[in-house]
Length: 308
Ligand SMILES: Cc1cc2nc3c(=O)[nH]c(=O)nc-3n(C[C@H](O)[C@H](O)[C@H](O)COP(=O)(O)OP(=O)(O)OC[C@H]3O[C@@H](n4cnc5c(N)ncnc54)[C@H](O)[C@@H]3O)c2cc1C
Image (cartoon, rainbow, N blue to C red; front, side, top):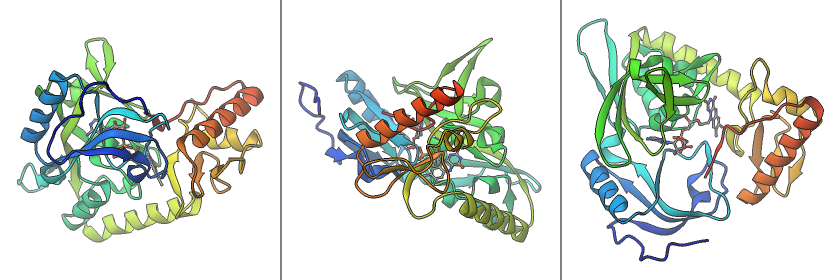
């Protein structure tokens, strides 16, 4: 891996030369020069200040369920939000209100379970998505025709210079698997900006109803997707008015493989790692699928998985 010439950051708790296969649900990926878990906003700001002053590249990840680091590796510092970033609280205690504030490091599974116990509805459709709140907001994750962006009221952000700000929903533009920051008529990508927390608007409902809807979504998911095998969920974005899985299957690519990387026989839009596939094999398979679909349908499939 290409390493920087300068000495590695001397930061407490920094893990060095880390295999990103251990931090990705695809169980594949090159090595990162450093990885650090930060526990609080203050710690994050001090770290960003240090990394920026020393010009170390950095990137935040959540649960690694939508990323693939190439086998060339990442010559920078991967940051994960832990500790205080896992907190969930009610923002408004008045009866009938469902406004909650969640730290971006919190897992969706913990959040959905908390909401069920608190009898707050709105996130059931996310049941079974194995990410963090920050990753889900960044990707505008969704399922069954719904997206998390529609519930967002306020985002708490730290920009690449360590500046903290909050943006109301009017300053945010959610589109298919993408969050942009609205800037007048224009919208810009999030870039290096880190999501640290979010306020969501949910609605009160009976706990039993919420649990039953979660169970229903889980059953539907299990019936359609490969279970118990390493993947990053849907590998490609759906083209407008079509489904990537349908195109891949119709192009005769379901079940093809590169080493241990395979187009799932269960769902053609899932690339699964059957054992020891590296990022290169997964990316080779991705290119084969893109070429095959282009040849048959003249449609360019765009990966949903973020390749780092
Ligand atoms: C089995 C399976 C099923 C899935 N099903 C679905 C589904 O139904 N719908 C769906 O939309 N997705 C699905 N996914 C994909 C994935 O779970 C979601 O995209 C999820 O929201 C990603 O969250 P994460 O925390 O894992 O993000 P990561 O994969 O860690 O990161 C994804 C991107 O977000 C950025 N990011 C992460 N945290 C932050 C932060 N705090 N601030 C700024 N940027 C951040 C990262 O830099 C990266 O660019 C599935 C994945 C798997 C493995």
